[in-house]
Length: 189
Image (cartoon, rainbow, N blue to C red; front, side, top):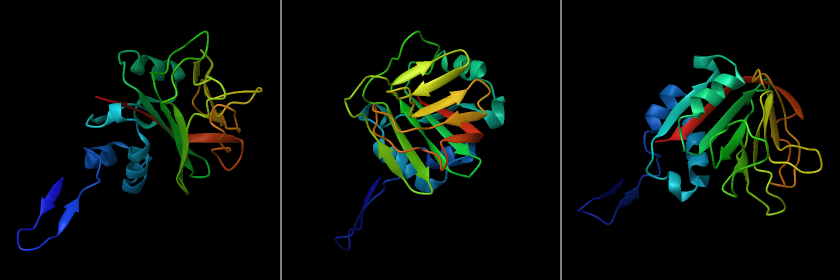
């Protein structure tokens, strides 16, 4: 949104993501500043698309099978958000929907990020292509040398984050192993 006052040279440009109020009303994880920071990192193909809450442990329970089922009808990229037991917020933008797979899949659009207490984004290094891996008992984002940038169990309760070659990230949580309080999956419609 751009507004111009005729009486002067004042110009203001809104940097609010489309549907910010809708996002805040649906999310139990994000605040307005976090939405703005994440939105700045999203690839161009998501601009102008509405954020849609496709899965939430708060609304749908904690089940990886349910998460896979809720994402099975979309071709949209997916934004995974996690709030852990230390109230830290972090996650990943996935170039493709999360699903069970025999091998890693996805593209260099995929990234990891910290959102609270500070924002930091970890983009693809080009070192490997270990972007997204879905199993029946867990999912992982990023990898290399036996470490995953983000790993979550089938109950969406336990997770682990370690530095990995794919994104050259730090641990996303205060501790490598963490307990998940809330998990949300957003798609772009």
